[in-house]
Length: 199
Image 1 (cartoon, helix red, strand yellow):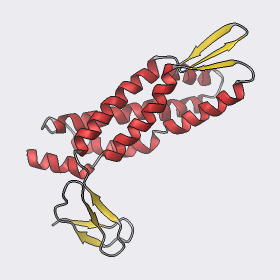
Image 2 (image 1 turned 180 degrees about the vertical axis):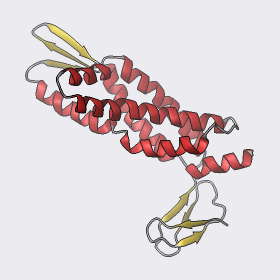
Image 3 (image 1 turned 30 degrees about the vertical axis):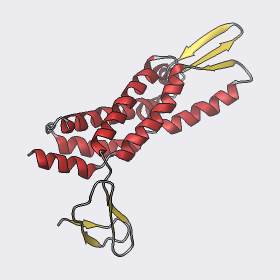
């Protein structure tokens, strides 16, 4: 039986076979050591594919439309980053581009890179490195912070111009929820167990 250190009290516990839908708890503090979700890999893969479609929509279609004095201006995620750069704040432009565009894209790409071959019964190249990279880049995906900033800015602009939400804004909001669901349903131990069975 493998030994697992409790995240809360550091007690070394032996974990046996955890049935699907079940959980293993620390005998000293009751912390959840392992929770085995049903169809974790397939559910996470389905949510990741849905999130990838939403990410594409959020980056291709207009995010917001501004109408002022009969002139309509449309903006996308990419143009927002470029506008920040042209306004003389390259640090903020790079930060917004990384946390709202690049990090979510890398997170989705790494999830697909790991889960799709595992689902098909294959071992992806550099599996352990890619899985570690996924864990490292996950905290940098801060789309919800970006969305809150956009909503605050929109409320301030309502008095000066007519602001119309675009399709990308709705896709972006849905993307936050779906990607959070994908990461919540991901069970790393299930991935490694599936790989061990295939070998």
